[in-house]
Image (cartoon, rainbow, N blue to C red; front, side):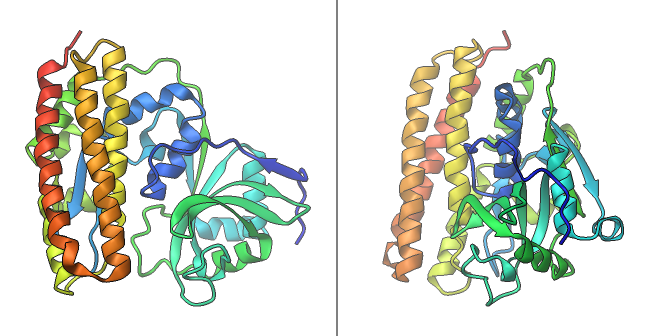
Length: 347
């Protein structure tokens, strides 16, 4: 493999405050090189949504614009996989050229060939989106970010693994939201004006379990817009989680812990947002509200840990405790969000 490049180059990354899905974690790790970019995430990462179909798994996520398309601190371009295969001798050569040009790469790989993906390595063809942010030509490895060993983190992928993982990627049976390989780079943005009216609107959407799709910016997933009745939003996500756990207890759905990771991330970001709003004069009584949300986050982490223990042990005896805690979190969050609305100022 003929790689003509610098011997080693690793682009800067910041460990992201939320890590439930790579679509958020990876882009945050690059955008936050510019500290002020977090304001954009405060602006948009408020609403949650979930898929009503619980027959196979439970999908809950932030209902936010696709960050690499919309965050003003990110420049992105998308390149067709077939075009890359025509113009570069290998995926490794393309990735090295991209990194040398200051671009991070976001692409699907077949984790069957990735040794740091233990539950799929050499046992299961599993397509997953991986972030590539550096390489060492002498060691013949790429520096990557993904959910290695069930937790977001970094790992080295050698050139041979990368070639095989890329060439055997089968995208026919997945929702290929990348539509190719996405290249991103951090950029300076002169001034971003935090939109407090948008924040109020999104919090009200959350409280009312609705979303005015027309009022959101471009960059949302089209499958949500076109099939919005198949999803629930905001406070209704808690009812969805209750239904999901009831199905799990009866053996009618898989043990999917990811929604509870998302809940913890959501409360983490809410605490960060409350502090920002308070310090910058948008939110009165913010320290009291912050303390209430600290309790909500603590209970959400407790819920997460209960769910993990239930799923690992297979003992469904604590499911009712988890459902009761979900109900308590929902009640407490409704009160806290109403307090935020009452104390927000348009300045």
